[in-house]
Length: 466
Image 1: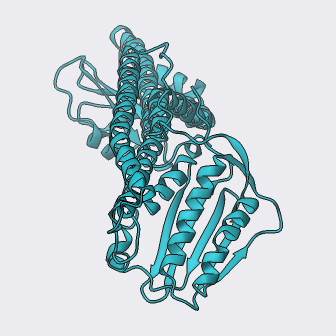
Image 2: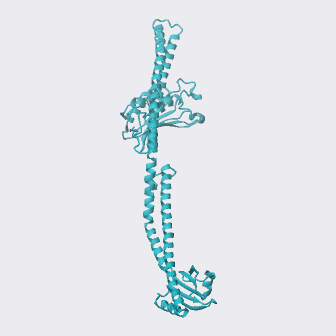
Image 3: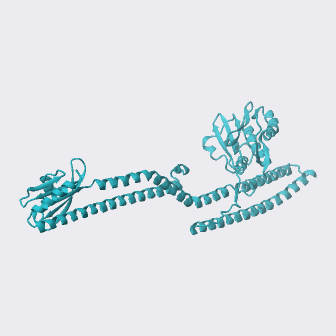
């Protein structure tokens, strides 16, 4: 469940996987350690019981001799639980004097026990039985060189360990859920600061330069990161403000002499002193330069977010109808069919209606400019689940493939547009307006078959949050 909350290969996913893996591994190591320790404790307890029995039989041997010890072996065999114990005694020649309980061959005993060298020495070994069970054995060398063998099955040890393993296997699911939960919590807390910084960078990238990161309550590193980021954002905002001021001053300084030159030229026209038409040309060039400067400033302010859209309700159907009415006469003059396709439902979204209309005007003007007489230009609007799409299509000459990536650059003019009037800023401004509304403009063009510009705007504008 929890791994679905983080995308594979993301930092959160990797931390989740690492913490969960360490949690599961540590739990398994604890289980294994307890299992080994418990097995050793139970085995040592079994060995202690066998040693106590050997001491008891040895005391009978030392006090009353071998025959009395054999009698004790008979009595112990009679009182023992069938299939649980083993009793054996060999003489100095290695032959059985007594054997009872679980059947064990002399060959098997000689195989697991090396010859005992000194009187009173003993050795513990485990013998695997044909039925799959284990027999814990002790061999003890008596003073007459005979060897006493005593054994107990490890069934009780196996039962305890099996119960412990079954109990652990039942809680393994809880351990797994706990591991995933711990990994998710640790991963979420570890990347929460990174996510907040990423969100702040995204907001600033969208032009919301006033966005700041709230201080982190925990973690000195994250607190230092947020402070540094906020300082950087403040500095960027200050620099952009200064850039806007400098741009405004430059534009003002350029506009003033251009306006004076234009005024002088207009005076010459009014006084009929423009015999060669130079004054009219000066006026036209001044108007063109003033318009170009204004467009460049608008593009710069839109791209830097210093001139955000005015938030008013915009009816896109009405907006496109106005654009269609505005350029219908231009299309008629060029003998171009100009179509408009609108959906049945009204599409409304907040935005800057004046700039959106300017964006559409630039796109339609561009399409009409390069469509030959008898051609077709269409303007269509539709709404998808997340985006509003406006499509401007023409069947003109199209745009060469190598120029399509450059078409939105400032002042870029393709080979086909060099002979037509324009500054090369119309598409750049249109794209800047679309992006200031959270959208973009894409181009699909096939040389010789026309072009299609698609404006995609989110249904709801992005909101800036602090």
